[in-house]
Length: 204
Image 1 (cartoon, rainbow, N blue to C red):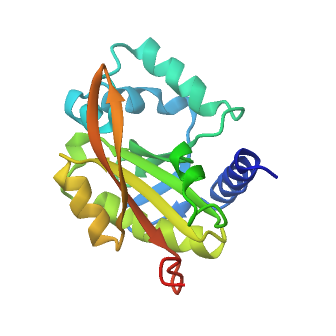
Image 2 (image 1 turned 135 degrees about the horizontal axis):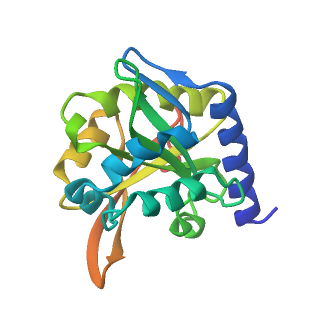
């Protein structure tokens, strides 16, 4: 199986795992998106600052958000997105997405390992409450144990100090640096990684 085939197989397996076993924490639920999530999705995708940090333009209308929700619900593409629900309000306040960054296929250390890239966004009205930290501390063990992953990778724009602090708090370390093109602008990125307990390929 080539790299693309292996990556797609891993994403399908992880997606099936999270669909069959939604993750629940004290305050949050991670579950598949539903059609009824449209207005909540639109609320945070229309926020300028939240979308700037995600590298996307804000969504202009409910129809645009509906198109994106249709894309999320379409299982034919490799990226898999799950809704982050605040249980107290029964409200979708963000999403966590499973994917695979193409540059990882060229990394000799990672080629033989089983891993996934995670990206996540959160409604800016719920920032600085420790919610994403709470969720990821529940997600990582499941991905390593039940998902049989060797590593989880995430990145952030170099200017995003909040994301840097979050990922370091979770035990991730700098793996490499990159450049992201957004609207004709080139933005430096920092690519972080967390290996399963007991694995450190650069020391093997």
